[in-house]
Length: 261
Image (cartoon, rainbow, N blue to C red; front, side, top):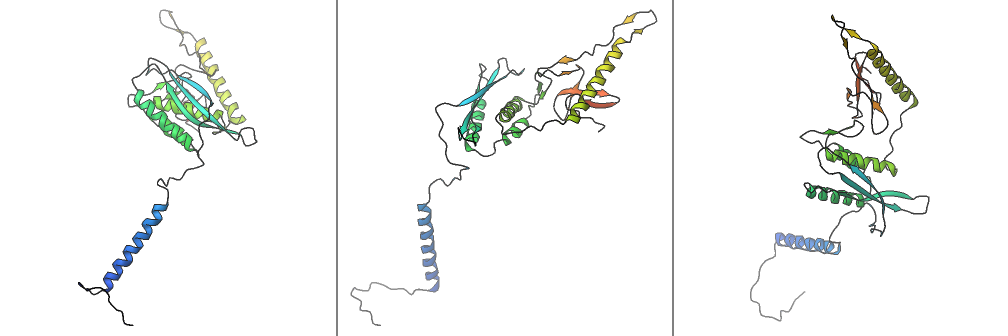
């Protein structure tokens, strides 16, 4: 088929197979760019639909009195109620605030609460925050809170508060102790108290008939109403200062852990 050229020829070139491959690659790249242009700018997959903050939220405030701070810390966790008034009604954490008169650690506290609030609003399983926070250790050493429970750091105690709050709203279910385990702990506590009473009743006399005061091992009442001896050490299982030596074996009077099995 003859083609009539109407314009003046200024130059020419021969189209090779390589040139055809380049043209095809350019066309494919242009089609991919057009598809990407039609997609949203932020292709972030959300766990659920976006929920706007209601005007009123319900929550709880917890007090932290740590020997690391002169002033107490107040942790407030606000919850959002989903499917209110239906059989599927549930409470989920929505935001967290920490207030104190102590401004030494204001920056990292604000950063921590903003990140935690963002995780709460993201939805899904947020219980992993508890394990992550409770695993934070202070290089200067931890402290004991009321009740003889060891806290490796201030962040760990915040994690314990978040855990207690999630338990209260039903997100975390604490496995209940069996009746057999409760009876075992009661027997161990009774045996230890009986042994302590027996030791206190013994009077040691020296060569001059001087009476030596017996060792005082009276139990102390903790914040939860449980009582443990002052000489007890920290249990590696429940992190409570309730580990005593009974019959040559380390035994916990709080959870029933025994080194001898």
